[in-house]
Image (cartoon, rainbow, N blue to C red; front, side, top):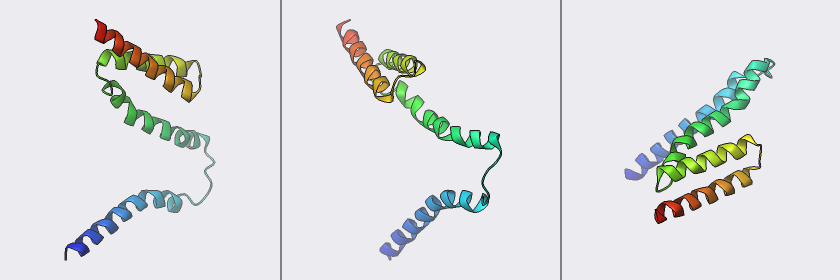
Length: 105
């Protein structure tokens, strides 16, 4: 009896996961021609990623000051159009150095 309940839960979760992926394919049979809708859909992944990661950036370190320094370095380098690897490594180094300075003070 317990195994059937687990299988039912797995099938429900699979359906709920599959449904949002299947609906756009069914709803949009023609190719989108409206440039405003196309540009909106192009920016959705970036907006969702930013909304998911931004709050965690501020609480991912031991101190809010070092998180702010790392965020500032990352934003500055991203604004200067540096590569993702450069932005990530420089912000990690900035957080590390800031944490070490805070420990000394």
